[in-house]
Length: 340
Image (tube, rainbow, N blue to C red; front, side):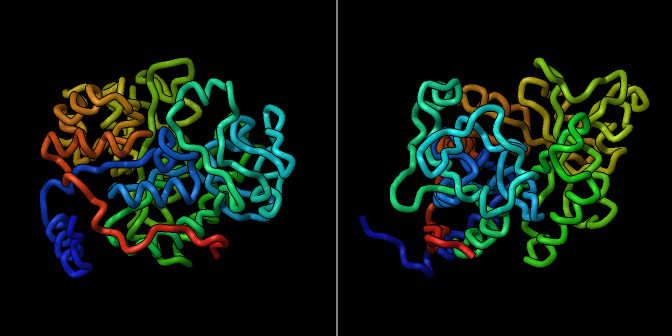
């Protein structure tokens, strides 16, 4: 098949950016963990090659104050292997207790065989070899995005902390200072959103960097909900939906949020309409079944986070809210052996 020239690729990209279809946000959850080991440079490179709009990722901090990309505040016993090939013992050491060099000594390229995680994502392609995946720094992800040549993609960065476990992560002020300091030094403010279940960090971001969109995560169902419509919780920085007519969208608007990011099973067409009337965007997490993707697109959500960004892009294209392919945007997404 004839491959388009770089100039044609650029033209296609510009045409895509001008199209209303790009208003829908296709987000790769942890880089697309159903396909590749989560939160690794290799996963992010693969997601970029798919043409996603946003890389969704999580950050914590090491003992020496470096932001690293990890969903857990600890080394994950189902992911992290030492130099001998042994997975770390549960619950795993806290990142905040380890220097960066030790954090990056672990191989995170293969899920522990037989684990619940492995059964959840049986199609994930493990990565091994002479240069196995390591836990990347956030700066390394910024570098990867720059090298990709994709000026379209953004990062949705989650601060991983829990008010109930204050010793497991930097305090909110320190966490936000580290994050905003890096974003400023790397001149990435126009390419990022900051999300959190812990709304304290979002309040600080709004005070210190009001140009960066804040994304308010929420979970109402399940074993560990983070919000209640009748009271403030430890997660909501003192904001109580009961003070706003029992409305979560109105509460987030009052808190200064730009985007509401609810669990997908918590959303309804009425809530989407209410949020839009308030000027909030609605992006839902984490959606992996095509029938759920299609239904949620029909409700009018502004974006979806998925472990299957390849499948999401196809469904969104079929619905006419995303370009059929984004793979022509990129120049090179292959991470270097030793990123800066």
